[in-house]
Image 1 (spheres, rainbow, N blue to C red):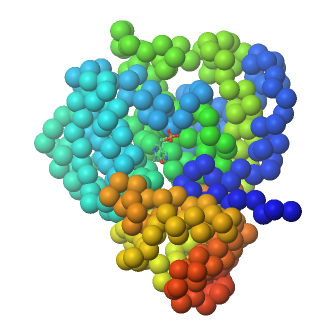
Image 2: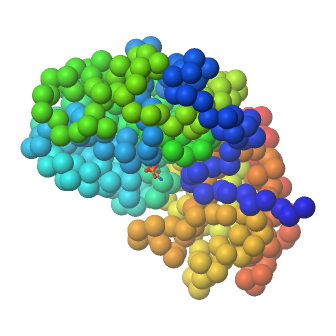
Image 3: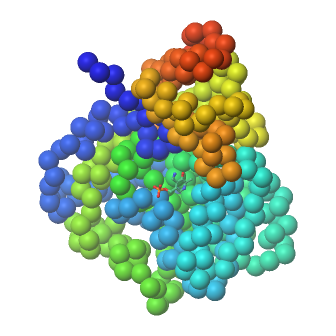
Length: 385
Ligand code: PMP
């Protein structure tokens, strides 16, 4: 039998067989009660996963970028002021979308690989008035996790709408919608939730929904939250055909998350992060970014001088492990590994076995198996949370 490809990019992540089975269930009517029951359970599970009692979930065909666009275009009018806290490419995407809708964005950026210090947000809020603040929990370009709870605490007494991009975090890193006072969380199915790509996910606070209702002329139709609201309150209603199979698969993925338990799942991701970093250290591969801001869901690994990035990744792919290239200023100088969702010991062992092979083939000194042993020891370490 040929070995299947192990996809360890920062999304889509490997899809568990139970989720694939759900995806393959014969397509039903979107109004068939077996489907509408699952749609309802998907929405309930999303609330539980981001720890909210009252936020309104939305699941529509699309991707994380559509969810970002829906967040901005529903809640902010042209000319309103948005503060973007950006840790890289996906933080900057908030700014690009804002400019497409005539929203005035200002950006607080950090050097790539570092998080914006909360103190800088505090100073910025003292100096200017903003209608909304957008932040990214994990920026997939840099592998940087942002102190979003601290940002939210600074915004707690304010009137700014808080927008949080959880695409590379939700379902792997703790997110507390109600406690942090988030207004609109957007996320994707294909990352730490472990589902196949194809849906945009949003959860909106009552304040966010009021802000949408207070706007009259919103130049949106498919992306209008108010057109979707009746469906999300009663999935037997119709607005536009939902992606039936993808929603059933997402429901199965969310069941897996809740079966594992949120605390156990987040602590597994902490250990996955440590495992991958320990393995890289053993391989002599430098990890990009500030050691205090490294995400548990993915890692950006630096190539030593002289390594041809594409050839290296192609060699790994021949060894049945697919990792991602880096983007922006890191393109060609680093590669990105996703370690989120429903992966465990086998995937970590395969990653480092393939890396041993590729590093040895490129003439680097390698003690076969050492990195995998270090990684698995970190993964199994009971002293980790
Ligand atoms: N935000 C973050 C943090 C992401 O990692 C991504 C995708 N990699 C997006 C937004 C955009 O999501 P999508 O590719 O599903 O449109």
